[in-house]
Length: 121
Image (tube, rainbow, N blue to C red):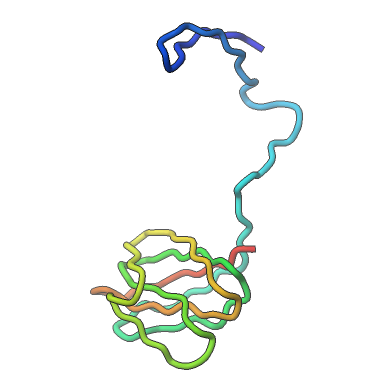
């Protein structure tokens, strides 16, 4: 492997070995990556919309418009507001930990749109 000289944090010249580019040999581990399940979509409208109960402990939320979201009980008809929900900007992706069996509730900010929900395996 080739060696190069670089400056360290103290301004000293040090010699380092570079890695092969592209990497060769052993497979690279996928440390820290997530596996996602099926994606569902719910409307973000002027009234609270609820997903079906989710059998996972984490979800990825992807907002198409600015909206407010919350994890809620698997039963009942809870409502959320801008004061009680987590704001998501249009295009934002957000990982949320939930208790398996909870639902995701959403309400729009100013315009209708969608919330895509993917369970994390």
